[in-house]
Amino acid sequence: MTDRVSRLRGLALAALLLPAPVAAQETVLDGLDYPWDVEAASGTLYVTEKAGTLGIFESGDFRRLPVETSAPILNDRGGGLMGLALTPDFATTGRVVLYHHTGTPDARSNRVIEAVLDGDRWRETRVLLDGIPGHPLYNGGRVAFGPDGMLYVTTGWTENRALPQDLNSIAGKILRLTPDGAIPADNPFPDSPVYSLGHRNPQGLAWDDDGQLFAAEHGQSGNDEVNRIVAGGNYGWPLVQGDETGDGMTSPLAHSGRSTWAPSGLAWDGDTLLLAAMRSGAVLAVTPDGDVSTAFDAGERIRDVLVVDGTVWAITTNRSPRRDGPSSDRLLRLKP
Image (cartoon, rainbow, N blue to C red; front, side):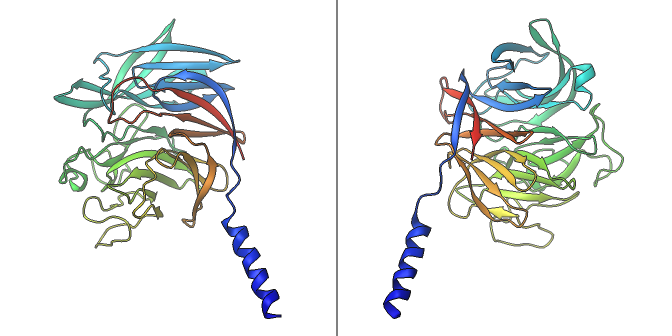
């Protein structure tokens, strides 16, 4: 009996050690160069590329269209044209919101603008937020409309340890604005766009079916995080990280410990959060209880992930922002 139990335990252990099933992935579009955000409306996909284009992918055809801005887009290192959000009235107005880098390599900043399609280009129509502190690598960059109709914006810490905890700075924060760029009256800090603070480099935003906001952010040498965001919450950077705690600091829902996910985009699939993880080369699944597993093993640096009617889309950025030159990237359809 003892031998039989040992054999059964051995078989169970062997089963646990078998490689996880690898997701099938279909290349829907190749030839992309450092895409940053993918969104969808009415069967059409919209993809930003860092060099300054917003492409339209429809019925198998891709049109790469330039974005014309009043302050030139600075495409340098990790900065360029980044986040994209389709406005709640996009179907009737065609308005989009974009986050972009500007200035010079010696004097960088970021802006949030509104734009519309005008012939064969996207044209800036107004600036919603200017003067966001910039950095070669840590700019945040995600924009998204929440279920409350408000515009949420992530910003990076710019490698300045004082700014994420400083309510007079908008660096290292998640911001909340009206669609017109004004400060909502019910924001947690009076007359401030700051919704939460203590962030290092947040690049993912998603809401679950109950309207709960989650964010993903890069840690430093590990300790990447997924956080459950509450109004006025302080998420600790740079005072605490990972399992560390501090007075008034909110611990992460999940973190990577000493390993690195390099997280960017975040999406809700109806049951779990799907996290685009560049260093992991995968889309990770994060449950509302904080359990983390691999949902799709793509073998490439996944920058953003999108769920539309049960279909999972992803874009790659296979060049590190620490290096220069083109990036050979794709739009993927992922299948479990």
